[in-house]
Length: 489
Image (cartoon, rainbow, N blue to C red; front, side, top):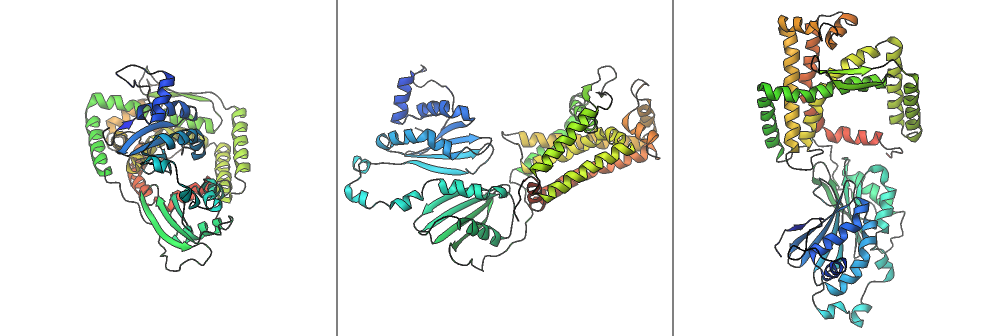
């Protein structure tokens, strides 16, 4: 079998293009046939929304990879694979490992050696001497997943992924984190958490802290479980994040494609439908937030889009306030989240009482277009929600095109009197455009001045995207803290 070959969880034929009976399929899986194992495990893991792939790592090592949108539950994996483990231990001479990983991630969250690789019949039937030399029941009990699961529950508020591997008189703990604390803090938190367990045989803890977004280790250290922490662990201020190696190339290609599509009228017209949809969704969101039922749509008569809205419905506001009250109850132990919810609710009520909700509704279309520049560029910088090749370049393309289109639009409103006259005409002379309504009904400023303000926001969008990416270590932990019902210091 060639090295590095993956067997996907597809119902592929196994022998000479012919399907295999279920009984024969199971027999082949028991014998270690990779394709048969992939098909059998696919059926078992499919109800749990877990994808199964097999890889021949070496001639004597087969890897079973479980992928899911969330970390595949190791307890479920062991429940399904334990019966197979008992069979393979007596029939397979290779090493079988199982790892759980999230879609789009490189490093697995957990790994389990299901078959250690028996090389001879003598090793399959241990001698009495070997049996007597086995670990004590207390130490063997430490090797199960209870410690990992309980430690995850104990530290759930930190949103860390935890993997515990017992060793001789020690624990090897890997933390996969999203925040960046002082190095001493990680050790203190783990040491305090382990005090809840009876670990008399454990003397040392080897702690490895891996940052998921930076894709590098922040800390590798060893400390005594029952003693004082070493004072020589260096503290480290949050570091700025660096671009992944392939990101500059994706940004260059995506930005160039966005420029080319912007300069070509047919492609510019097609991609403008994306911005039109974003624009109208912005209006619709604002309408709903202030109690107006609304539906975004395309305008097939005059072009562009239009959001159809009805009068304010009190039931929508009561449902909204009910949802806010429910969130406030769920996050009653998180002071920051309560202050945020109260501030946003107060702002919404003030806008309604002052009539400025109409300003927010009218402006939200262009503001969401500008936000699209920020969001797409930020996703491209961090490779977020990029599960297949090319998605990072696509985000960069959309960011580039949206930036150029908004910049050109507001720039023309600032500099071209002809363009301003055409813009004031509106849709067939019946409906005024957004900026015209803002200048006529709310703001005592010229159309060109207001366009200049939106142009400034457009220019700031990529700057803010780079800043948000660069300083993730500062704001991402605060954001996650707001998402925790019961945050810990």
